[in-house]
Length: 369
Length: 243
Image (cartoon, rainbow over all chains, first blue to last red):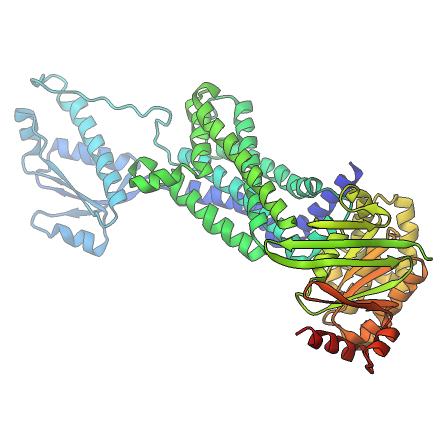
């Protein structure tokens, strides 16, 4: 036990003396969460639009002010009939043009016809889609409430949409679980693999192996500090998510922590596995970055939905641990579900941990022989 | 007869079909400086790893410090010190922190540690640098320190794997003074090297070639036997004979 504490002291000295490690462990999580939460925001705020109002009646003015007071849009330009609409996009004055036909109010009241057109700059397709759907929603909503109350149109289907679990469609709800998965991978897997391969590179690993320490003690000693730090990080991210970004924890906090712990264990065993393969720190870092970080960002469903991927990538995504963790976290935090709904994902993570540990032990033995 | 601290009988180590150690037989005595020579790839590092318990032999009997290498690995490890080819202290820790760490591993009590640490610093004349990071020290110091730390727990045998690589002759000479002092304390020194002038400093040397021990005797006897002026010639003659 004394040996072990001495080992931990040495590991913490390594960590605290290396500015790069400190930045990765304590700086990156906070910066990334703030970046994704505040800056790289796919929510629309104050998007510039232009309005081409050919009828200038009461209704079109009401709709216009409704649009502009929604908080999503600001008026960049008022177009006159006959002006070149595309010019607005070419110059970048606005992202979307709302064009009301002549006699909008009359057409609406007499025929129930909404003569309005939304033109969006689809050189950025995501934004275009979001802008048009927001604007369309606002206009439909207004027309339905204000104008069509008394008119019963035959055979009209009223579709009512409700966004469950994230009524405000806030993207930060999506980022918090993703960033947690990413940071825990980064710290647990990458930092442990680097720190173990560093001992190999410097030749101190041989000295440790020639000492009375057992290999298992060496590995535990290397891993425990990162286990603690990762856990602190998981807590920090959750607290920031809850108190800064208002992400709810609808399910059990205890379950959330237990699942995070499981994921950290999985990532640590992955880090050990990498270090048994990598001869030095550089290789360990490249394997971790290319083999773990990129797939975590691209294939885990963190940013790009898995359902939309082509089949081969969908299959590949199954072997990426964060893909399962993100489902678990979203379920617990946003849907408030218990273990009954996420036992499959949990089992996958447990299975992965054991596989990585078994492979590490095998590699380690081969190396010793 | 002197006390044997290493006994090797019919040691064989194979990696697949490649034979790294082909039927080695030798003894090393207490307090001896035993030079383990050979060209790169001759199999000396492999043999040394087996003696340190870092790697298991394919067959043969090996006893180190009186303990069997297969069944009493832990006891073997408690009684040896090891200094690797690469420099084996932590650069981002201070001298005192390194000593503290290695003492902890070998279970030396804090009281003993402090007493021994003082002697060590005094011997090396670096008392004022106790709290400097290892990374900031000159290479010669680092090597002497690494050696002193490897024998800090008073092992029966200390294994040095090419300890003087990349060091100037003067520093090497000083390093050997330290080795002599250690051997005088009754600690056996088992050292691999490519430097043939260093081979002259050893009590006995063995010369390996292609996984076999081709010669084993005192430097004096070897020079007579091969009618050579120095160890360099002995080494070249042995290597050429076998080609």
